[in-house]
Image (cartoon, rainbow, N blue to C red; front, side, top):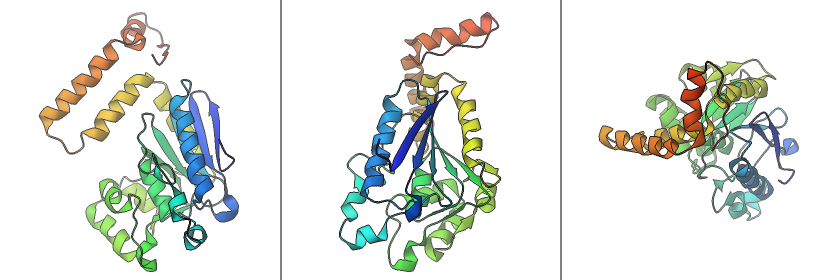
Length: 256
């Protein structure tokens, strides 16, 4: 992994850190490539079950590096598989929690919306100010904000360009957990630990079905849920869960 996105594994939780604090963690080509490489590593590492994504320094991410765009490098801010910042269109199986301890604006908000859960400190802010620059939030913000916020609140953010603070985002359910400044990563890690106590393959299958069935009819949802269960039924962990319950002990998951 390049130095722009650091990868650190501890107890089945991988910490991914955007490490460009001198530029407010703005996304340039190196950040996009580093993010793609870090997610590759998370996905391919059998010991990594949950990811936590954060930014070094006081700003989570200021979004696209406008200097890079200005010098004709806009295409470098995307990757073939990940889209903007190497993450917003990335297909992946393991849950990622955004740990936001400062402003996440424009593309920074779109990176957060690409994650599965959000932990934010009271210093965090979210927003898509693109309209203030005669741009549109083209990396997911325009359709993902309305999935995690009430429609009118999302509309307000999109057409005023004004940010929402962490408390309001938490009130509406965009943020899972609100925490004190400086504790976002620790709080996200504690949430990741709660996920990692569960059977990792079951977590991945459940997350995949939930993402794929948000707008489908019940029959399709039942079918996809049953297909997921059948895929789990041939794994070692599928036998371990009931056995541990019968033997009154904690399960030991192998992830296979």
